[in-house]
Image (cartoon, rainbow, N blue to C red):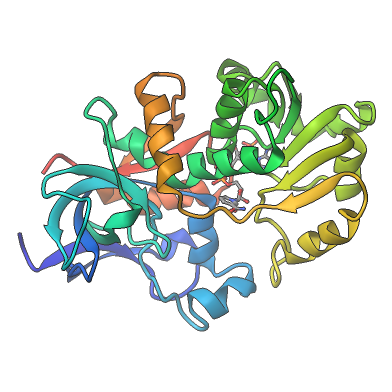
Length: 333
Ligand SMILES: NC(=O)c1ccc[n+]([C@@H]2O[C@H](COP(=O)([O-])OP(=O)(O)OC[C@H]3O[C@@H](n4cnc5c(N)ncnc54)[C@H](OP(=O)(O)O)[C@@H]3O)[C@@H](O)[C@H]2O)c1
């Protein structure tokens, strides 16, 4: 193994067009960490936010004047090629998948805490496994927070706003598996896909479809795309129902925070609005891998880009119309 590697970096906040392929030192795994040779990295809307440093609210945490982590990519599947001190539960040569909270996946190698990683069954391609930690994990946690599938003998009617992206395509499949009757908003071109994934009804988000729906129609709503007033979401929900806010959209300075504050005030009534902050959950990731291995959940991959074209993959995501996931893959090494 060499001492240096290729990585896609952006030293300043800005668009994907400014990301450059550079040679940097191969990281050394610290206490409890392993070094992965990256096989596939899936991208998320969050990668674009951190690339742009938008909303400004993220900058005190992720770098005030420039990104603390200049390499994006938060979902990674790879092979363990070195162990740091005191690593438990990971073996050399093992194929694993996990979440990188600070990014780092758009590189040939990355160091990761071993406790975050889950082994990938041999029949699951690296590109499919890489889609699961953030997008699948967020969908799973949103459904838990919405209480979908937690009451036996009850078929909840669930509305998913924004069903065609990374989180949305998992949310539809997982909700259907949990026995929900899934209604979903997406654009007309994505309706056949979303229905194949398990939605019984799709509504075109470009035509304000929600105003015509009677009040109290849904037991729960998962808002992934934003754009619908909170009062309207509450109108559509039954008394005692739950609305989960996943979307990170909002203004240039504070992002989703003002909407979350309004949600806290409006939640004093009988229809609670609960913002989700998803976190890395290896036990959920293991369940998602099981579902994929059984063919009960299928990661939707719009396009795989070779590592040499990772900046184009980020630019595609930046445009905001990704269907399912975009994944960057490395040639077999
Ligand atoms: N709370 C958390 O912990 C957490 C965790 C992960 C992600 N997130 C947030 O979740 C959101 C989704 O992330 P993602 O990675 O899944 O995004 P993504 O894959 O980039 O989503 C793109 C998809 O959203 C659809 N879309 C855009 N505007 C829409 C609208 N108004 N109504 C319906 N669909 C719409 C697009 O369809 P068209 O082609 O029709 O435009 C496209 O298919 C982001 O805001 C992200 O920041 C939050």
